[in-house]
Length: 480
Figure (cartoon, one colour):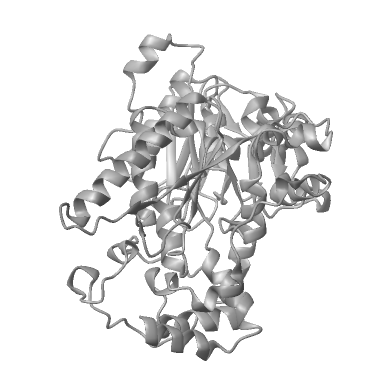
């Protein structure tokens, strides 16, 4: 990371940018100040990058949003993930005094502008008494993702649309996106034109999945198959159940719970409107970019050279494609695109270890040593600069090799790379048999922002078309 305002030595003294133990609001404040003081952004521009409007599901061709603004928000999404609040955020730099509402719009905000050059903003109307001889010349409600900006030098309110159009038209974001951004479906199309054997990366044979004892190793049992997995396979959504969960806490359970089970979602204890399908369709999205990230302190065309995924779950075909990335896809297909994704290389790191059976070492000691080896290899590979995607895989798990819990594996690698300021140079993908329910996906996305590629779910569903599910359950009962 480099700044045009500070030297490299001075910039290093600012780390960590987000102070340890800060709340989400404090973290937002740390990052906003860093972008404004160390970057080349104006305060309204930095706010637009961090707290954008809902843009993913907008169609500029239908008039939902100006194309230039849509391009800016997609460029910014390659630099920063959006902050969703919910909150009304006020900010100032001495010249601009402003406020912005997050894209969900779950907080009220009203404002008045009067003829005596005063602007009042509060969560409700009537908080401040306005003298009877003062006339209100403008009033309104702050809408989701919109800016309320007072320019103290110009002496007036700035129009949201006009201000944003000035910001989004400063750089050729559309040209940058055309040259650098690529979606997973586009990458599949490009790779399909390659007739070599490089894309035929084997991921294992699913013919013996019903006889594979790794199913109970990864936590598949009759209960979660019947009550959780099968309803999802049949209806494409989670099964409905009764209110409440009488399962014991993971720390008290005698059923050897997975590491994921030790994590519970905490949410703000405030009253929020329900997220209905209409709001979900307009505001929410699962699309995400992966891969190395460039300097976020400057406007650059190189920031968009990332791979965009429609959702954080990869299929087996997607994994074959990613495994096949060896840096030669652009040359093999003869493509002339300037997208750097076509020159990416992926590498698989084995997240399993051989368990000693002589009793000399404890399983905990062996697990710790395996984690240290995994982190050492990951750090060495990333420092070399030759790999852009790391696949942390427990596919080698079996009778002689014990899988490292995927959350521990990716968490350890993530933290090691963060400590050495290498995390933004590589994308992390987890290939794990543990990712069969929604909670592992949520935990991993919330904590490490990685992807999960669950092979067993797809294999079981694929085999289910030819073999009764009871065969799976009987096998699990016999061998489990």
